[in-house]
Amino acid sequence: MKKFIIVIISIIFSINSAYTQEEEKKKDKPVRSPFGSGILIDNQTCEIPTAKTLEMLIQHRFGKMDNGIKDIWGIYSPGANIRIGFNYSILDNLMIGYGLTGRKMQSDLQVKWNIIQQTRKNTIPVAVTLYGNIAIDGRDKENEGIWGVNYKFSNRLSYFSQLIVGRKFTDWLSIQLTASFTHYNLIDSISDHDKIGIGINGRARISSQSSIIFQYDAPLKIKGISEHHEFINPSKPNFAIGWEISTSTHAFQIYITTADGILPQEIYMFNRNDWTKGFSNLMFGFTITRLWSF
Amino acid sequence: MKKTKLLVLTTIITAGLFLISWIVPQEQKKGEPWEIPEMYKKMENPYKDDVSLNKVGKMLYAKHCKSCHGNRGLGDGPMAKNLETFSGDFSSEEFQNQSDGVLFYKSFIGRDEMPNYEKKITDDEDRWAIINFLRTFKK
Image (cartoon, rainbow over all chains, first blue to last red; front, side, top):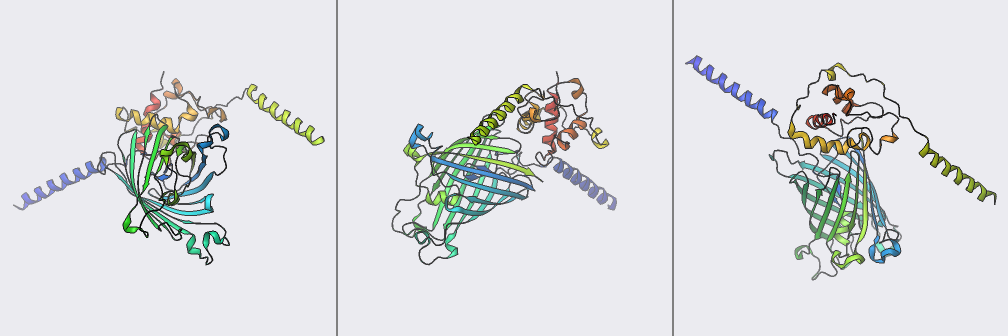
């Protein structure tokens, strides 16, 4: 009887160990680059460069296109906006960054955490990412038109947090859905301090390096969080479509977009351009990224 | 007046140098022999003949290698002329006679103008997919 038990136990162990080895061999890996870069026009993607990689970004928004050939559809018009930023991947799934935007001279600090990565064999069908930032308005504190008579540093602050759920459906198509919360410490009297938004964005690869990219972000009008009886001139959805070229260390995106803000909280809270109204509400923009690995 | 003359002269010299740079042939040197560690010489390709990786290899080559090594691995990509060293003809017998392990070392560890790609292509399966793709350049 004793011998029989020992034989049974050893069979169970050997099956178990063979199974474990098989499991290790078949370990499901994350999908290959669902996006060409960590940024997609104005939105973050679930892509984070490998640990110890420094990324530099230049995000540029030209003027509106309504003057046509006179200023080459806004490319030579005044009123451009620019953000230069630096991101650093601390871990393969954790990135921090700093950026400075021309409009309002906003400095921003940001964090992106890739909580779950989609896997190749669909063991995990989606990628889940959290993104958050805090921006500091850098305009002159003596300007009473902006800050009122009682200037307080905390009035300069705004916050943005976003949940991103994305899926690479095929080799050529990746889509993300987003839900976000924006808060401004100081806002004009007819607006709300808080804004909830949802969005969809994605890329459709058309060759090994080129993709069509798009985004649509909608600020929601939610009575429950509003401080007013009605919405006066609420912010408008932001739509953009463009083309991305992505290489080993660079990504280049050129697009037509609605929002002249660059930071997401600026777009969700203050975009009054309506993409359905044509050239007078649209502009060209581009983004360039460069990676350095250490 | 003196300033204008100086400006004109500078412009002519700059333009001349620019134009000469198109005419003067810029010879690229052939790279010195590589020192390959024994470990890589003996390295086996676990994904040899894995056709499921064909597309992956092609995509990754286009993203990371094509700008210097060219569409067909002839060393004629748009960035190739900025290199001091000829980046090699992947279709040649000399190149194709090298073992997979040697190609792996040269491709991902690199030296001098050939950058290290260990941080950019982190997955071993992806790296071997590129090596498999390099084999398709054989004449």
